[in-house]
Image (cartoon, rainbow over all chains, first blue to last red; front, side, top):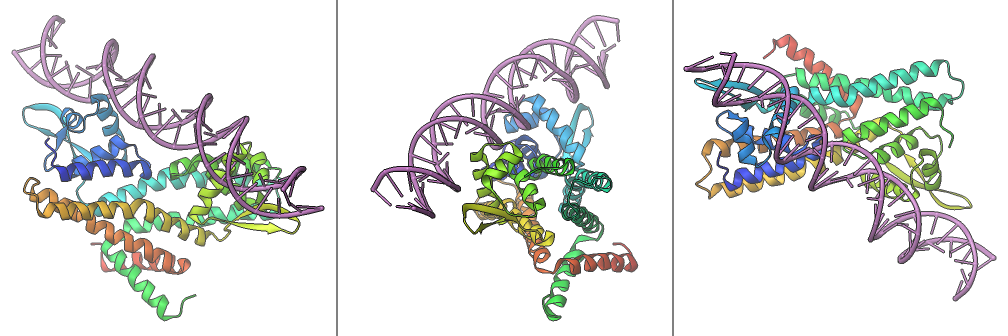
Length: 175
Length: 175
DNA sequence: CATTCTTTTCAGTCAATACTGAAAATATTG
DNA sequence: CAATATTTTCAGTATTGACTGAAAAGAATG
């Protein structure tokens, strides 16, 4: 696929940001490319367009699929897998939130619960410190619910609610 | 500072997760240590407790300060800087949200606006693709407002609102 | 079932980033 | 201002993770 300068700029930037968002450059670039592309692309074409190894595309595609951000599709008379990105941005956001929670929050909650459990028959650790750990556990559980809610509530509605909420609390006097 | 097994577990895990959250291991470990510690610690003590180089602590401390997550304090008759972490988790969350926005969202918005601008006198890029870029720009602006709101609304209130919101929309019939 | 097409795997290389230790800079004390 | 304490910088090294190319595995075709 031929990239115009604007498309290049978009894709390269997405790649750079990807590293900050916790995915590697190629994965983010492929995602950007598929998001922009009007038609599904096959791996070979992706590799050529982005000048990366075919094998690298294969791995990155797997990664994007594990996030649920891209889908396979096929064309008549063409055996190759073609890939297309979700195009709905709210859906994309929801998928990413869920996955981030699963990768970033859930394992920590598990660890925190384990710490609390061990804490019950440990005389070494000061109560104060155990309390801090419990605070974090409680906090992360709340955040976790939060993530779920953000995905479930139809999102434009959610935005309105939040804006409304901030007005309400402003009115009631900031606390 | 002597670490009990529970504290070790907590700190080591935090360090591992840090890498997923976009900060390096040492930075995350120091933050965890300071969060747990009942008193402010000086750099030397941090280095010993975590078995890392003194210089590494220096760099990491700077990083944590740039996030606004730790503060310097002093003790009578001790020239060394001591450091303590924010202890209020909502405040910590708010600080992190703001910084993430600044680092992850703002630069992308700048790039997207630049793409739109260039797009206005570019006949090469199909309209459809330009539209996609504009969609992302609009979306990220919304998300950005969203971040701001989340920080401004007193957070326990926010949670209630969101939970309430999801009930309301459920009642009105999911859309 | 041999051939061709396509995808995946993997050992080795490369690049980015974290970390160390020593030296330099800065600050405090008498 | 010399001596000491403390922090920062930085060149070099180590570690981690990304990427490549070649080979293997898997699928479809005639």
